[in-house]
Amino acid sequence: MLAALAALEIAARLPRFKNAAASAGFILALAAPLAVVTALCGWFLSLAGGYDDALLAWHKWLGTGTAVAAVVAAIFFQRGKIIAYRVSLFLTVALLMAAGHLGGSLTHGSDYLTRYAPEPIKKLLGISSLKKTAVNIPSADWRQRLIFTGVIEPVFENKCTSCHGAEKSKGGLRLDSFAAVLRGGKDDVAIKPGQSAQSLLIQRVLLPAGDDDRMPPDGKVPLTAAEVALLKWWIDAGAPETNLLGQLSPPAEIVAALPAR
Ligand code: HEC
Image 1 (cartoon, protein in one colour):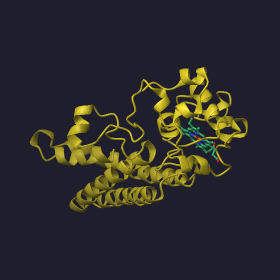
Image 2 (cartoon, rainbow, N blue to C red):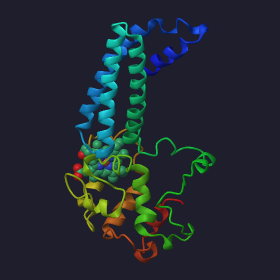
Image 3 (spheres, rainbow, N blue to C red):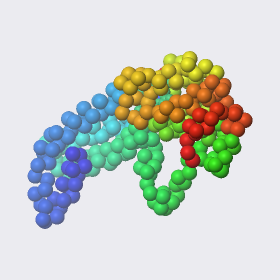
Image 4 (cartoon, rainbow, N blue to C red):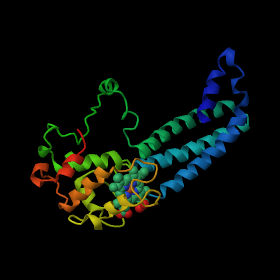
């Protein structure tokens, strides 16, 4: 609604749309209170924690600024101060865009705008699509894969790090590096090397669908049985980091469960 108000002000400068801003007062009467409610809801959500502190601080202040600027714009409009209204409206929209962008980064990760862009566009923007985990190993020879970066980390990266990574670390847990996985979260270490059944990470992954504590939560793509088997085997093997898979002599069903490259 705030962006629409700005668009109406611009459109109203064209003779053809000279009445475009006629319902600005009505839209503003909805948008300004809602901006305040939105900022408040965001503030409550921030109390749940688990977000990148710096990103969150910027998002919070820009979001608060958006709400304040929207209310100021509404007051100017109400008093008939049209120039001051336009200036504060465009300031509101600028703040909204900045706050919205950071909100997207908090929720979806800072690469959210380009992550799924087609390859040529990524090239144009100078972004390599090679993930940091894509160690260049001939995929046919699983024996040469590094156990953590080549096998385990990609599972976390696909299914867990959107909530357990640098920008968001729900439950205080990050799963985006070996050290972080071993460190664990706020309740407990996530894995106990050698004891998969006693490892919180495995326990929560194995909870039945519908359980509030199940990981990943309902609505997200769950781990496949093969991925669960892989994680269990890795933990029971002592959760090694730098061994080559070949050195660990995995049983045949684990080799069959290895993610395709
Ligand atoms: C959609 C977001 C989301 C995804 C995806 C997700 N989690 Fe979580 N996870 C949470 C939230 C929120 C919490 C904290 C609240 C709770 O404990 O339920 C949490 C907590 C945890 C904890 C407990 C940490 C502690 O010490 O309290 C573990 C272990 C865990 N997740 C493992 C995983 C694993 C493994 C995956 C991937 C298979 C995963 N999560 C994917 C949102 C997510």
